[in-house]
Length: 153
Image (tube, rainbow, N blue to C red; front, top):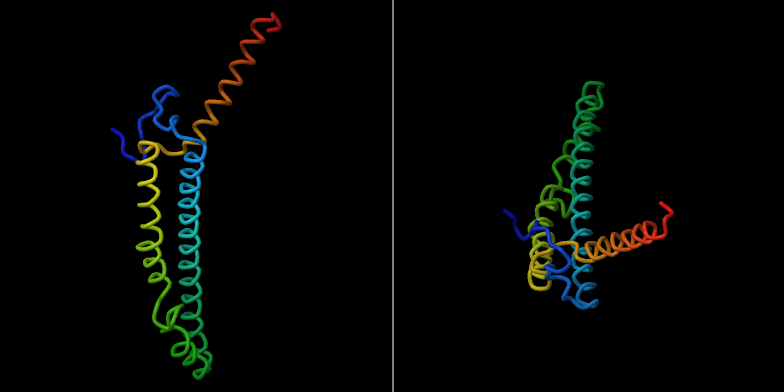
C-alpha cells in the first residue's frame, strides 16, 4: 500500500511526471526544496528549544548554588529576572515558538508541497532526481553495451 508520500515505483514509460515540462519540473523541485529547508528550520528550532532548556536548567542549579554559598541577592535575581520569563516577549517559551512554527509555516508548507506534487506529478516525490537517475543509468548502460560490442571486456 502506498500513500501520496510514498508512491508506487514507476518506470519511465508509466511515470506521470515524465509529461511535465522542464519549467513544471523545476517548479515542483523548488517547492520540494522549499519544504526541505522549512523542515531544516524546524530542526534548528528544536535545537534552540533544547539548548534553551539546558541553559535554564543550569541557571536553576546556579540559583541553588548561589543561595547555598550565601549569595541570596544573586540567587533571587536568577529566580525572578530570568527563570520565569519566556524567550520572546517575556511570555512565549521556546516550546511555544516551536509549536507555533509547526502549526503555521511548517504545516502550510507541507500541505502546499503535497498539493503541488499531487497536481503536477500524481503525488510522486523527487521527480528531477528520478529523471537524473534514469539518465545516469541509461548512460552507464550505453557505455557497458559499447564495451561489450568492441570486445574490450
